[in-house]
Image (cartoon, rainbow, N blue to C red; front, side):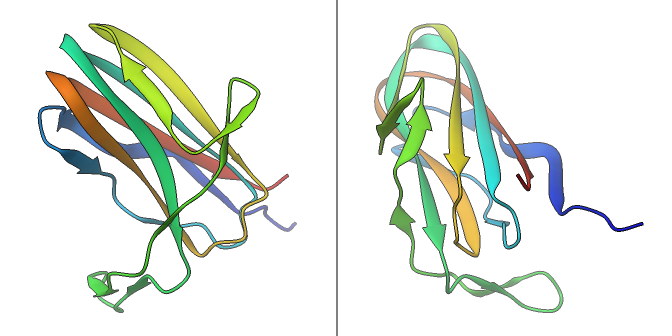
Length: 131
């Protein structure tokens, strides 16, 4: 029996400090996967900012798992609440959000939060599979 490629859900950002200018998730190798999604949850004192998704084809890991090439990263258009956007707003003392990435042909992917004001804690979970 064959298996279908997937990444079981896992934390991409864990208890990220939303006062930092940016929070960048770990990079995930996504080759052979076509459906990907980041969920977000946050809480704090009026955190305001945006999240976006970046991809890279030249990011590389060494055999021991360390980063061999940090890669060149490009922001992509994603699906958010049925609209094509490049950034998604984050606002309010508590909240949740979800970014859907369909049909991406990149090798690696990550998400980035950019702070505008306020403070809080951000968590993000990635899940991926084939169509």
